Length: 359
Image (cartoon, rainbow, N blue to C red; front, side, top):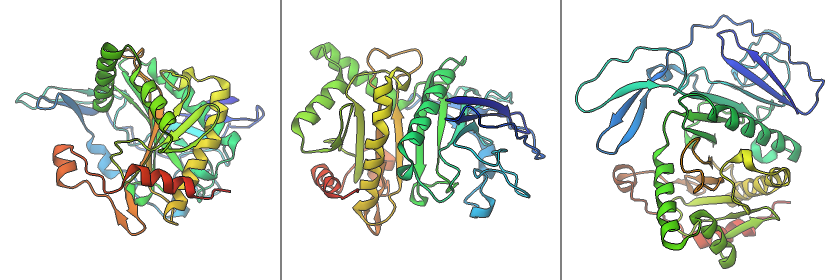
């Protein structure tokens, strides 16, 4: 793999990942860009003990441009984009409208009980393919492996940044999810704190270890593989299953069979085996209702400095679509109280996904 680092016109870092060591990535970004915004504010909510990022500059970010104006396509004559090169395989660059960054800003105190501090961290965009009309499910195995190498590279590098506590790789797909760009891409957040979901999971894992001596995530995987009824697909190194207490009408978790804290710790055979199983699951999702499935694909990894001995890296995939013409909205119970009600039986979702022909 060849890794090429360059800078965009406003100083943001961009990295090309190529299988071909001879790939020429010397193109220069010739756009006239405004200065980068300062880092967001972090405001502490004493009622939930959570940090909320306030990033006013994101209100003006690019929103669903036509294909001819997509900023994630390669640059060409008369068309300069975020990627200066006229071609690429996988590209990672700093987000122009980040939720977290290292740029200095002003952070006035707001009074009350809410502490304010800089939203120091980093937000990156990961372009999976130069093909605007493609999708992750259509990527060939070697391209998925290259995306995996990019995720691993960024996880290792961002985790070592001062002030970063957790690295989160994810993809939002589909207008129903709220995407702002249709081009196949994902994002990486380097948070300056451990996220609420991770804190909850690690707390549960610690209590489970005290009770049983085992690892909670490993025990969940073992129980699902033994039960079998919710398993969607598997291979030598990975299993995909619908969780027994799924929150979403369509929800699938992918676990490696060997416990690792993060993607960096995966062995080569595990990295190679991920792509074929994951793209199969994505094709099953698209076949469920006969329309492209909107989804969030979220990698859960160990924080950079705490809870690593409890963590188990895995991917959680979920969709808001509950029928061909119906979406799952987070209404009163879910949005106000965090108390989910799922209209779809998890075992039925797993059965239907298994029945989809993907060849």
